[in-house]
View 1: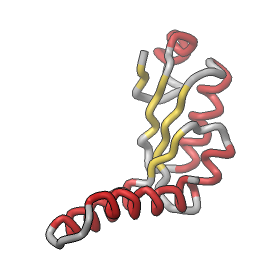
View 2 (view 1 turned 90 degrees about the vertical axis):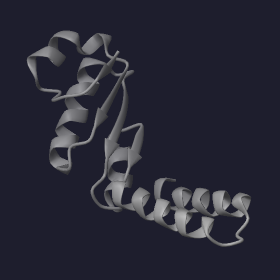
View 3 (view 1 turned 180 degrees about the vertical axis):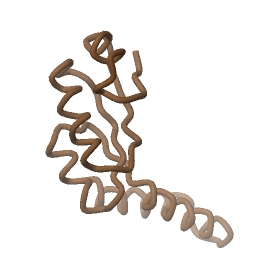
Length: 108
């Protein structure tokens, strides 16, 4: 079961132990951290994917128990670069490697 919503809501408190994965797209870091703590208490095996508003939040969210972190501004920038490179005779394999390297630098 995938859960989208507030982890302090009554529905999550009721169904939390049956949820396998959740997405935290909230732009407020403190809300994300509170939600991660509440979700982990309910289900320690839960897979959590969260949004980082700023690059420096990626490491902190991972340290607090988030399984995967996405930084939307970074991802948007990568897609813009990829689209620009498609117009030039730039090897698609090299483009893929470049993007993978950029993601490794940010996400680890």
